[in-house]
Each structure stands twice: as C-alpha cells, then as structure tokens.
Length: 507
Image (cartoon, rainbow, N blue to C red; front, side):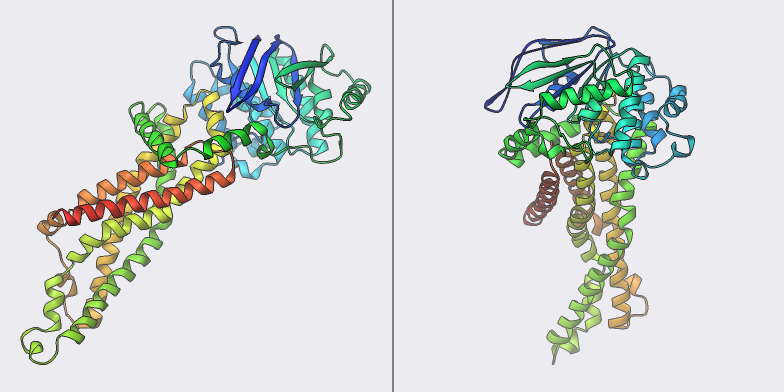
C-alpha cells in the first residue's frame, strides 16, 4: 500500500533522510518512534502529500491523515466538520454514513451539534478519526494521536484504533512517543535515527490480550530505556507539543529569515488567484464569508460608532474654538462663527472617513481576522483540509477575502455616517443652529470631489489582501502568529497613509 525506496531529503542545510526505506502493507499498522530532530512529522507530511517520486502509493488509493490534536475546525460543530468533507467530495464520500460513523466512535447524538471546544481531548481525537474514515481511506496516517491524553483515554483510543484498522483493513502509519499506545496498536515498530529507519519490533498484529499488551510495553521500554525516544513514565501526560518538533523548529528558523514583504507579496498573489476558482461549495464558503463579516464588521459596529461620534464632535468643537479665538474685533462684524460651520458643512467627513476608518478597521478587525486565520494555519487545520480534499484556497481564502472587502466598505460607510452624526450633534449644541442636518449636508458633487468611493474601495482592497495574505502565510508557532498579526496592522496602515498622501498631493 505504501512503499518508500531510497528517500533522501534535505531541510535547510541538513540531510534529514538518507536513503530511507519503508513498506507498509494493507492490514499492517507501523509505528515510528524517534528523538528530537529526527524528522518524524516531516516524513508523514511528505507521505501524505505524495510529491516525491521515491514515495509510492497505488493509483486511485485514498490517503487520510489524522493530525496531532485533531486539527478540527473550531467554528463548526462536530457534525458540520464531517459534512464539510462530504460536500467537497460527493463522489467519494457518503454523507448518510456520518451518524453511524460517529456512533461507532462513541460520539453520541447529543454531541453531534456541539462545538469542538465543548469536547474533551479524547472526544476531539475520535471525531478527527471519524472525519478521516469518512474518506474510506486505503492508508491512514496518524501524527501523534496520543498527544495530551490521560491514561484512560490513551488506552481507549489505542483499543479503538486497533479495532477500526482491523475492521476497515486499511494500512496505518503512526508517529508516537508512548509505549502504552504503541503496544496497543502496532504490528511493526521502527525507530527513525540518522535519516534511516531501523526495526525495533515485528509483532505481526495488534495485541490480543492484556498479557500480550504488557509484554510488548516491557519489550519497548527495555529496548529504549537508555534513550530519549519514548516517554517511559506511563502515568504522566505523554503528549509532546508541536513546538518541540525539530522539523518545525528548523522550518521556523528558515522562514524567519525571509523578508516578510516577500512573503506578503507571494501570499497576495496566491490570495487573488484563489478567487478565480471560487466557488466550489457555495453553502460552506458563504458561511465563511458571513463569519468573516461578523468578526470584522458586525461585532465592531459599536466601536466604529463611538469613535466616529467622537471624531465628528471633536472636529466641530475645534472649529468652534478657532472661531472664538480668531473672529474678534472688526472681523466678527463681517464673519460670524455660523458662517464658518456653514462653509465647512459635512465635507470634512468625506475627506477624513476613508483613511481614518480604514486604519481603525485594519487595527481592530484586521488583527482579529489575521489572528484567526493564523491559528488555523498554526493548528494545521488548513493542512488537514487540504489532505481531506477541501482546498483551503476555495474554502477559506476566497470567501475571507471577499468578506473582508465587503466588511471594510461597510465599516467605512458606517464610520462616515457616525462622524457626520457626531458633527450634527456638536453643531446644534455648540453653535445653536436650528437645522444642523441641513448645514452638515453634502452633495453628490462633494462626494465626487473628495474621491470618497475611490479611496474606500482602494483601501478596502489593500487591507483585505494584506490580512488574508499574512493571515494564511506559513506559521509554526504562536509567536509567528503574533508577528504576522502585527505586520498586518503595520502594512495596512502604512499602505493607507501612503496612498492618502499621494491622492492629496496629486490634486
């Protein structure tokens, strides 16, 4: 089912795999152990993506991958996570099997509509396995499925995986650190060391009873008691964080040296290319677009309103203060404070709102969206989607881009209305004008002369592209998510400031 012959692979300046060989037949469950720096997770990713000629899987075979911590989508319910995969691949998956599959993995009907955050670690892992089994895979790859589980859930998961592997008669390949889990599922055990795989055990099948399970655990512990390859304390949490993975550290180090601007430019191009292939599953993608609108605009309506009212009233208050200071003596006989406010009207709103509203949107909503998208990348949800036949470019990139673009236009218009209304309130209160709305009115000519719509569309395009591009850029740690979120704000606000200056100076 899986055959790797003489795989050599470099990561950065180092040789990660050196003529590595591996064969996994249908019905076998091979487990790979290894120390920090050995490249276990990198090997699994290369196998799942099947991009190298040295990695061979029979044509037409379906490969599924269960990532560490499950990599489920937090904004969807349990059932919706599985339905998403089914809708994107209707020719391969049977949506009617979802309920029976969840029940088979001990996920009761009361949890089918629950959010992922409401599930325990063990339940999340089982839902992730159900999502993979929905693809009717010929090969399932598990990346540390035991990470973060207590002893009870660990043993239960091992028993369940062993039963499912036998029931579905698929080939399984797992990376694990825990002897309890390995002994419960493995038919073969390999150690990845110095770029090659060496055999540690060939048991021919999963453990048949408790005595055999205990013997296998002791055998593994005795072979590796002096090494760092397994966590020998069976009574502690055995999960290793993804930040401890050497391959991830190496990737992080390499990518951190790249210019963020280059990453941004590449991602912007890829972001807009995704729109040409959109939509594929309109229902799911519109849900992402709607969720984007909620996060970036709807949830910030009060924020934009309060800042807009403050700016509108403050601007009129400044005019009133200047009129009291400048219009003195004989000048006051010819020019009254009311004349100044009537001369200015509401035109200032058209000039201030696009730039200031755009910067506020970038700082508030752009950071929220960049962080959300970044966590999907760091948590490998986007990788899981890709491996399950759900292209992130169509499911996430295009709808998020369109949702952000629409949201920022709406936010700027709403901000402008609130600035104007703040000016109306201040005009009546400070100048005592009976009909302040008439005084603060603007005409279509004013809108055209101010380039209001041109600036609004341009700024929205720039910010939406920047947020999605940097949000979905490769990340390996929470620190990188924070860095890209900060870059999103800086790049967006600087772009707006520079374009605003160019527009003003070109008049």
